[in-house]
Length: 140
Image (cartoon, rainbow, N blue to C red; front, side, top):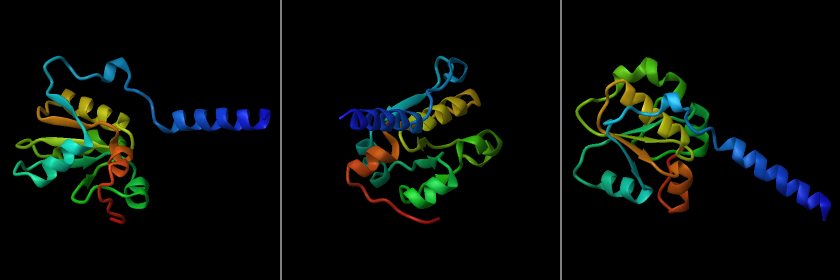
């Protein structure tokens, strides 16, 4: 019984560590920045709607390829985002997604600090997308 409890505790700690860190206070978007949290259901609706969004996946290339992604998304890993921000559109909403919603929150805040105004963060990320039963694309 003690071994099982220790294993459960260890598994819980590993899960928490894998979810990523919350953004530091310095990374929080400035007041007035247009960052909106949306659900995966909202994203699914927006992808099928008339609004032309830019879906930005900020996970690693390995996660994007091996764990799957939303079809039509563009991969720019979070560590590369500041350097590659010029590749992003300024004339339409940018929807950021990651594994759980933590890195995408950081990405939205970082982009808001760089002057982007139409930003949306997918709460729950790819975990929530998969749990909702939505299609996942694999490979590049």
